[in-house]
Image (tube, rainbow, N blue to C red; front, top):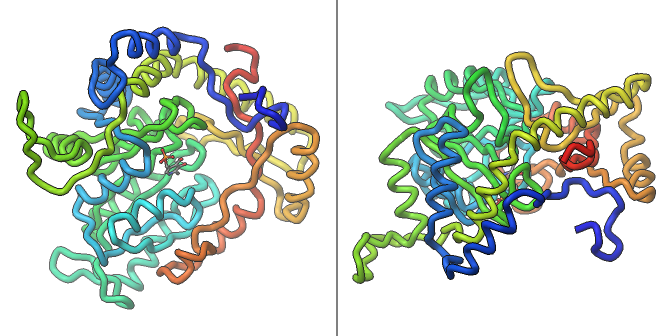
Length: 377
Ligand SMILES: Cc1ncc(COP(=O)(O)O)c(C=O)c1O
């Protein structure tokens, strides 16, 4: 990737393919098993389940499609609302929209960069009411069907508190764990606190399949439905083409799963290298009081997917100058996403006040984070 004309000298996040990637992909090509079924698909699902501790992993075409299907499977219906952080990548909101549902935005918490569970609890006490088993937004009259926390740059949200809150309001919990493969709360992997979680293997993620995703769950029936819905709802048969509902072709090709298997073998190395990089950056910035490297919370283990520099409030107005200077010098740095509440298709959606998310959005700079930067890989 670094050879592309005009690409920066130090990229934000580059994949590393120096393990078995080529051998496994070549095997797919040599045997002809390049498409929607194959041994690597089964193996990648098995190994993802083993690594995360989930009973099941169902691999899919990408994280966005996985989140859409996950939301449908926990019962999100068109016209309902789904609580998501205002500070997230656009795909979190798009997956909600693809279900015909409406995102309803939640503020962030400064120590996790994710959804603020305490603020959400106070907010729901004000704006929502229980009607039987259903949580209703009193303003819109719509059901609040689900909540989707997202583990920003691999830093886990306070999931035990959110599990309790979601149960109290009878709201389904689905995790957007796109960025957090390798991030844990205690001995539980992110993505395993709700009914199901989604992982992404996009090219910029800690483990990549080129493009791809997975739904992880302990729920046998949900996993079976996820496989069925994402593979055109074909009823298994040696030659008959019988499909029993309108469904999706969201399958992950064997070629991509082969890449995933080889990458997963190297996840431990990637995680170690990213942790080392965090230490190196923290040291490098230690005598600059106006900046701080964002660190994992006690009791959690972050994957440090993207290294995150927090500017002190008094230098937040320098953010764009820093971005400009570093990129001009060949170091690819990036701001965090524009808040989803500011995007044209989402600005009219329901939202709680988002002062913390707005503040964080002004102060975050992501630094080059490729695992090879420490020289260990
Ligand atoms: C927070 C978040 N959610 C969802 C996605 C969507 O994943 P994908 O690109 O695999 O569709 C991504 C990454 O791309 C992401 O960072």
